[in-house]
Image (cartoon, rainbow, N blue to C red; front, side, top):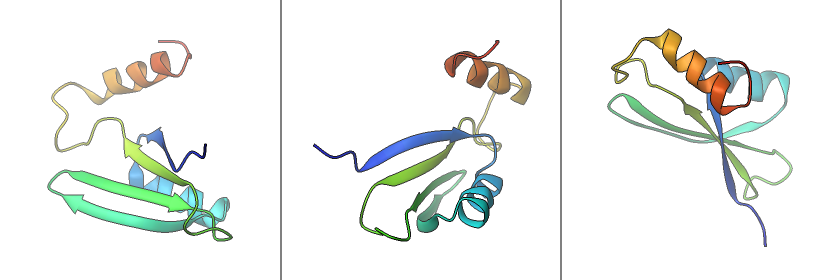
Length: 83
């Protein structure tokens, strides 16, 4: 069995893309926009057809109906941090 895709929840997809590509050395594989949603994945440069990380925004700015502070608290609670 091989994991081909896993999701990493991020606050800001553009900043996450910069971090994963410029600092960690990943390469962008998919960047598809549909209204306020964005499907964004990165992969290893050594294996571009290997596993992908989806950089998924927890609550897209143009779609979210509750305050961003709540999304930060929710994200912390989901990751096991302090709510």
